[in-house]
Length: 205
Image 1: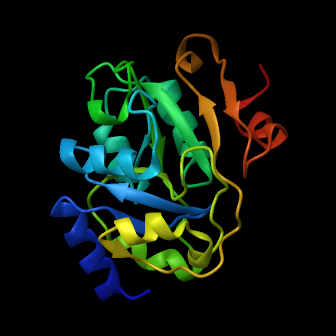
Image 2: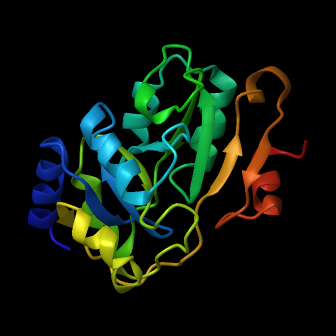
Image 3: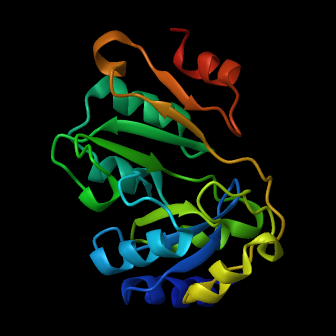
């Protein structure tokens, strides 16, 4: 993966395309989170129910915090401790940002900032956020290598980045919507970051 590859990838997404890319966990699909047609294509390609929310991925932590500048201080501090990393954080969304990613509840938003080290480091050059979902049919196995991605999904995308073999565990999903008020969080899905590691970072509940 080169900076030129990433530039072409970002251009494809800006034009309404679907990108297949490596994160710090598994391979994912990326689209412009503001493009209704691109989001619709992604859900159709995955055969994913449209009411299921997805996450918005930023490639720089400061870009995420700038977009979410109205988050309470305690929640922002939690994000700084968790990210970048293999975590999807569900946070309050009072301004109803990125509604296409929110499913039926626009008051909550899933946010990802991957750890861009090693082979996937060139992705840090991307300046636009993307709506992302794992590169598999809905409910199917996650793809650790590009070759593991379902052939129909590979055929349905507009741009591909190869980051080699990835760790293979999906991100851990943690709900921080009550964190500011009570210091409480809920693990929605345990993945690459263990529950015990989360407790060490955020405190026990």
